[in-house]
Image 1: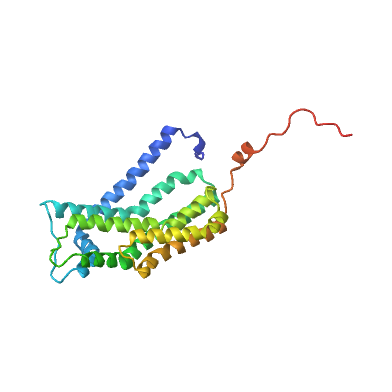
Image 2: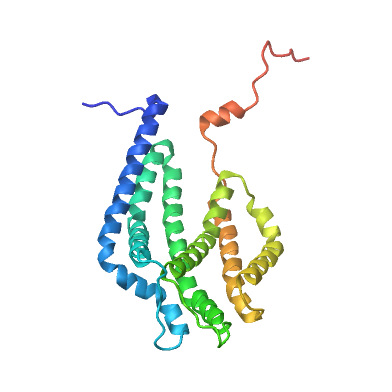
Length: 266
């Protein structure tokens, strides 16, 4: 019968070798999915460009400023979309690397956090695509004077679109970050709850910076999700609690017992 592998006997070189192997598998999966996405690149770009097409006058078209621009943008779209498709497998490889060093209760929590992080990122990107991005694009197009003809580059628009999707996706990771930091003991849920009023102010400041208008309705539309996500993170972190220290760590941090004979009682 084969003996179980003792993770503590792994050397640093062996750990780095395993990490390199798992990252290589994730990268290979992303490339394969990216190549497979080339067949759908035109449909993907049509979906991405719909907010701008809806804001432009009928018959408006994109332009390219170099012979390779459309080809390179198509490859970027395919590779980006392939990375999104392969992200669950990439996260699984990272999970398989760190899981042996966690306790059973920690493994369950990390699994939930990983799934929550993926869900929150997709929710943030969807919120941006449906609510925020169409309004912002329409506002920017309407700001262009009639005597100026707008010419929108394929590559520039793709970068503009991707930055907004990525930004809102990361912003919606706020509750996951709060829960993780509170679990690690970096933040305190009670202190975060007491600082709720400052979080509200910061949310509206961020909305005022990101929103190109001074319309209170639009700013509230962006600030309220951030406030809600902050509150969700605080409440969930209270339920999860703080990470229990391992027994070895707790023993090492415990004060040493006094040496020598015990004092005689009188």
